[in-house]
Amino acid sequence: MLSSLVAKRLVTGMCQAVRRPGVTAVVSSRGYKGDAPDDNKADLIEIPLPPWMEKTDEPVDIKRRRLLYESRKRGMLENCILLSLFAKRYLNTMTASQLQQYDRLINEPSNDWDIYYWATEAQPTPEVYQGEVMEMLKEFTKNKNHEQRLDAPSLEYLEKEAQ
Image (cartoon, rainbow, N blue to C red):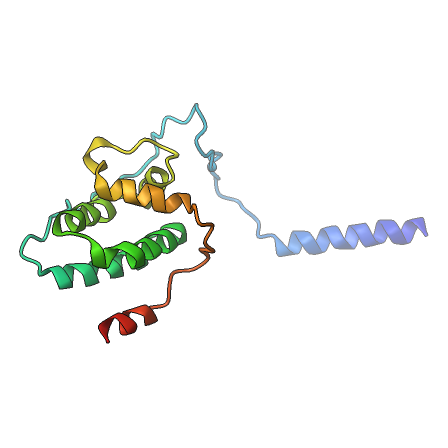
């Protein structure tokens, strides 16, 4: 019985070795460390993005539609859900000044995680993004009514508003 157990382990080990590709090249020992304090981020690659430009000549109805789309199509699911639900609730009632603040807030920062951390108050919001819309977003994010927010809203509500 012992020999069959040894044989089974030997065969299992050989099968696993066959499934694993052999690595003969030099492999970097650096892996994901998260926010480790000793990480100097020397290997960070920064991709230059074009600067955000406000669209001053854009009609308000077009701006609302664009912001609705941009609220729904984010780089991360958390912001897609959060911002699309926020847009559903507030976008159609925002003033021109609020629309400009919202446009800057969701389009100027190059990292969606920054927006998420500011909205959830995990990190302080930079002064340039402080304003009425940011306060509205922070309050909305608190979800005081305990709404179920698992997905971006359906766009059917737009058809009802148009009628």
